[in-house]
Image (tube, rainbow, N blue to C red; front, side):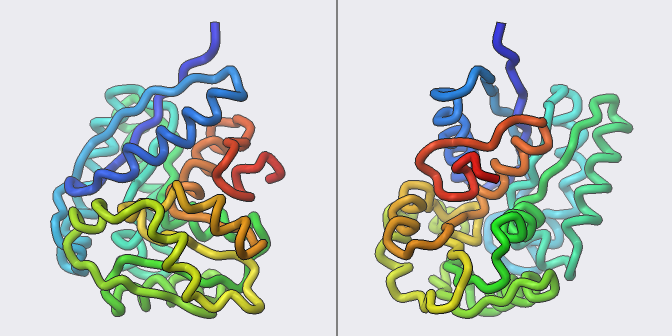
Length: 250
């Protein structure tokens, strides 16, 4: 019988995207590999993408990790990139270590992947030192992402901020929209493009099309998070149709 893996996610209460995009990637993988996946979430309250709400939400992540440990998930994803980045440079390492400790204390130890850490480490796997990014955030939050990546040795050459403060509205964006919007990004001299630096902004349907157009690796927070979930599970990372990072090459 094929092994079934339980994928846990800590999700902002208003997030509707990571629970669709990560399963979509892993369903595509099921078409070419024997492993199967089920999906389980715990929510932390957040409506507006502001620094204050993000900090309050992050403090709720311990409870979510314990709840998911009770379900004995095999890997746990923290599905909010900017919440981690707003807590200070390098915070993804602090968060991952603390949340994994919470799962162990609850009797269901599981590796933890934060979408912030996954984006950083996914770009490093690709060897990307210069990138261009698309975000739905207000410009100060996009700058926070730029600074966070810069601290990790990744220079953001160009960025577009859609300036949508309401997190529900972010989730209602057309997943094909990044295909057009990214045409306005300067990609000269960059090593990769981030089609959505935000886990709530749908972009999965655009990833391969942008990559085919620009001839560079294209990732999103969801793509990077799924890649690292598969790595933590010790599984192959090929999920067809979702760009270079999930091509199986890495």
